[in-house]
Length: 105
Image (cartoon, rainbow, N blue to C red; front, side, top):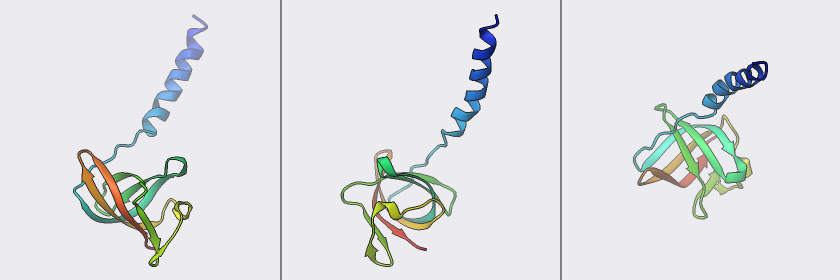
């Protein structure tokens, strides 16, 4: 019985943590959206954007995705959480392909 308590404690501690890491994402129609970078995953060249209409978009950069600031092409490492961006996406099934990401600030 004494071994069960630490395991139970660990489980109860981990459950809220696991759920907090699993925020949902939304699929929107193809178009252009403005919002704020919610999360950057550099190793995956992936960002999450919270749009002005409260949608959360999951965007994996491809070779054809353009990233610009003030009309100039910039590297992915210029993206930071909290930045205002404009994203142009194309809906492909239940996936969003980012065509262009423009850093606004």
